[in-house]
Image (cartoon, rainbow, N blue to C red; front, side, top):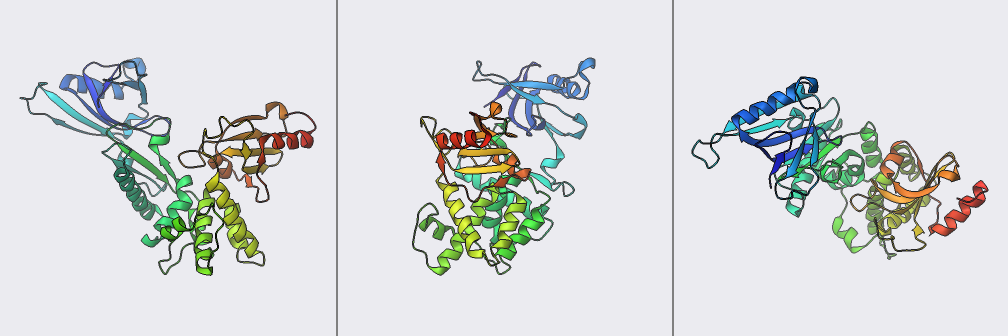
Length: 372
């Protein structure tokens, strides 16, 4: 699949990677030498001097497709590699140019961020596994504390929702024969790892979750568990619920599990993990007149009632009913980013019981004294 650069003639792209803001990270472009040199110069010049601050790519096979915008950003950060095709090819004197941000190949320990890039399009299990393997390597490279390979499943289950951006799920997905993911380790990562060790979720003896056991004993079913199975299920429940909790609430619950009320909070981990696992995904309740509200978040006079979790990762684009600052004039159904809620410390309601949306609306009306 090739893309044509709309603004300049005779330039074709077979792979393009942008970051979450749409800025260029990697570009593989082909063209005659004069066109390539013109493109390189235009990227370095300011727009008022004939340069470009962005350009568009159009699929050569889909003329009706809306062009994809690529923002150049700061051109000084790019490194360039070029090569020439043999002159006896069908297209004449053809040059191949790679433009890329060096952070793609060298993780930054100062910002604890790095990229995984693969020269294959996203979609197959093989590609997904290769990207996941690369992400785990980044975890080990960027982590401020040593990580054991036996911890991979537990750590990635607990932190991927917060730390990893799958570029195919952003507003600027990779174009062409390329797939990528970005890892940014958050400031609380060390504290999270410490909490996971203290809680028994991971251990220095190579302890890890048994996925086979979890598959056999589903979290969405009530099953009779042996004591050993119970411990495994509890650890896995903690990893499932981690992305739905703020760091402070998650660590507090882990700490409470070791106290007098440990049985209560371990039970809450399992109960809420079952609920999250059984929740409908995006669009699955679109034809339901009175959908069930499964989760509740709150902070001050603001409430978020979650009906559907995101198809991809559960927390990026959930769907529900929100009331901000008790202002019922602005209460509405819409998409809610759970990852943003937990990022600012919004509380997950451990005592909330699932209820139809109609009952939630009635409760809100009674609480604030007017119709929502």
